[in-house]
Amino acid sequence: MVYANLLALQMKISIHKAIKAHYFFYFLSLGVMLPYLAPYYKELVGANDAQVGLLLMIPPLVALVAQPLWSYVADILGNRPQLVAILAVISAAAFFTVGLAQTLWVLAALLVFWAMFWTPLASMVDSVTFQVLGRQERNNYSNLRIYGTIGFMVASFSLGAFFDHYGLNWMFPLFGVCIIISAIFIRTIPPSKRISRKHTNLAIKILFRNKNIRWFIFTGILIAVANQMSYAFLSIYARDLGAKNAHLGWLWGLGTLAEALTMPFVGRLIDRFGVKKLIVLGVLASVLRWAGTAFVPIWTGLLPLQLFHGFTFAFIYVGSVTFMDVSSPSIVRSSGQAVFGMLIMNVGRIIATPLSGEIAHLFGYRILYISSTILAIVAMLLLALVINEPDQVEMDQENMFETDA
Image 1 (cartoon, rainbow, N blue to C red):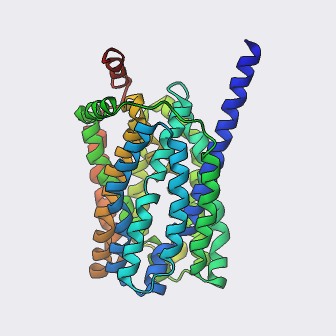
Image 2: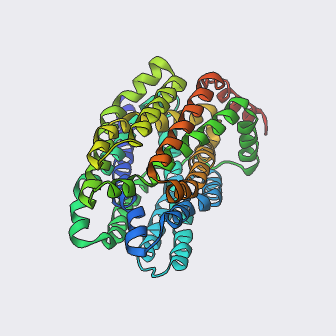
Image 3: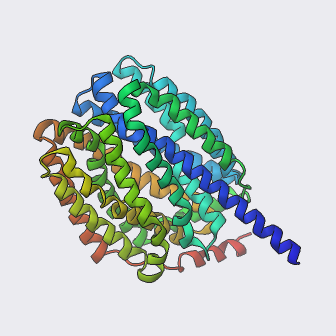
């Protein structure tokens, strides 16, 4: 018995290490790409602000199809880690071809192909992580996810000067190398049990019958629009205020450093205050952050405001995925996280990116950030006044599957 317990503990530690390594390299790949993609579109491809917004809209738009499709396949097959690994390798090759595009139309087509395989990865891995942790350790999610924050931070602080010297085209092979390494680690996670299609469909229906979840999804979309409008043009806005690529790395890296310092405490804060209050505080930080961003005179004024990222991301993102995990029947956690990714993150981006492009093009960047601030205030009020703290009642609905044979 003692040997069996030690073996189980050793396996658990090994799985946790694999998840940490995956998060590190996956978010390292994001740090290679996200801060520099909009400047690449504008400076090397020649897109204007409105066109940049449309190009940034493509991945979340494709995700409306890709995320539910692959998450549904994952719930049926049960082997999410292997599927994630396959999708990651294909996305590495697809993103490399994006860097070869010479026209906007070809670029758009290649982005569609890449996004079909890349966009489901984050939500599927989060569902694997919650599956490994189980109910009792759910609030330890942030202790694993922090390694992704560290990966993004490493890329942000180290690559800006590199891109200034060698050019942004290096973004594409570097992304591929990082995400393939992440696939190698996630592939080592044991698969979960297969689920019947009947049970999957029934559990998803249960999820959407929950009024609290419906309100949370609506409010989450508003939060995502407010934040994604601001993130989409942060690098371009900083460049407009005098920043170089090296400065962009430090700007994004500082925000990620604040996130890394905040992330270890998120689980304990959820235990003490609950998920809802944590997200409200995160949205309040967004209000302060984007209001300040609208009025800085030079790019260095953005640096202290980036410290709010520790709350705007860590509190909102971890709080939201935890909210969905608590509210989802365990057999469709992958689909529950897909709902978060598809309807909150991706619909938010689909609305935010073209809208932000048009606002920036017609009225300027300061009006863009004032608009984000107003949306964040509305979302914060809805969250505080309408949405209830999630509890285990929804999870008790799993019992119906035991009697439904």
